[in-house]
Length: 57
Image 1 (tube, rainbow, N blue to C red):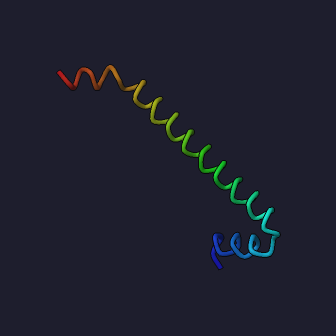
Image 2 (cartoon, rainbow, N blue to C red):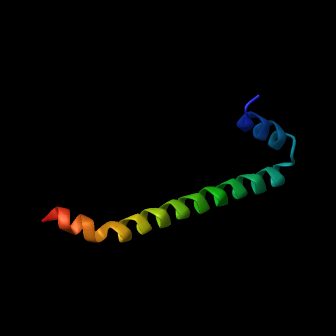
């Protein structure tokens, strides 16, 4: 059984209000991952901006 299948199985036995909390938490975690990715991308851009400006000449 995959991890996602285990999560679905466990969540399916919860009350609907608790299932909504689980979904809200997953949404929150996805948002945090997206923000971390964007921060990493911004850092890469900032670190390499002088080189990219030079290459653009």
